[in-house]
Length: 298
Image 1 (tube, rainbow, N blue to C red):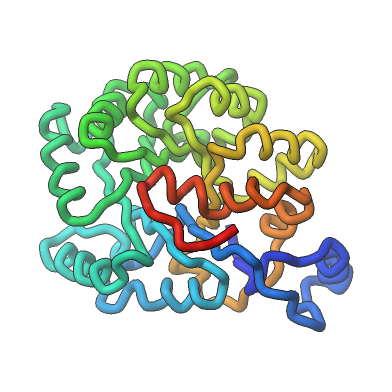
Image 2 (cartoon, helix red, strand yellow):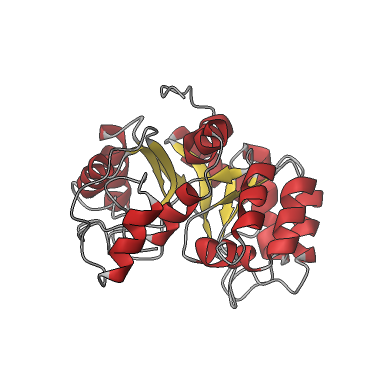
């Protein structure tokens, strides 16, 4: 995902005008969105001094009330040293209640569930609220190395945000391996992302079948798929209104770029969703999943 607009409630006419003129900014800024978002999928450099300041500035510009940062294997994003961790924890403490964090253990980094649990308990004590972005590079989704991590997260109570693609947490058609994990660890709450969406029929089935599965709507794959049939898309969102989480997949590579209207946001607004559904997707489901008391009014 690339750019987050200053305001989401663009009319379809404004959006089409934007496209027709080759991507230039609209002549008039649209009204501010009535709902401030909770973004569950952001990447940043919290291990550098002041590394979350750019996130806070981006949030202020883009109607983001609260967000969750997940680490990637990049310098500045993940704490590889004691000094990194000290800086990271100080940065998140400064933005407590506004910018939260996930934690990560690489598949194969630990050999036992107890070892993983010990690490995760320390992460929770230091403020982590979820596990991710879980990549499982080169592994099938239900590989034993992954299963160890799911079990540990279930024991500690951390939701798991997972990434699926052609070489990470791999699945075959039908996503039976995801079914296996959801059945094996019914108290482990999983948040689906990336290529999971590409098997939309089974994604829909899994959201309906498993109480412990959620999905974040970040990434271009979501509007690309759903926009093929807007009638189905509206029905899908309403049917799964209690399971979908707003997210952007924005990161250090995009925070300072000039925001511009983007189809991801205009698409969801174009579905003309009921107010209560919009609220749930944009922030209410995240408030419930992570145990936050909402401050926004419908």
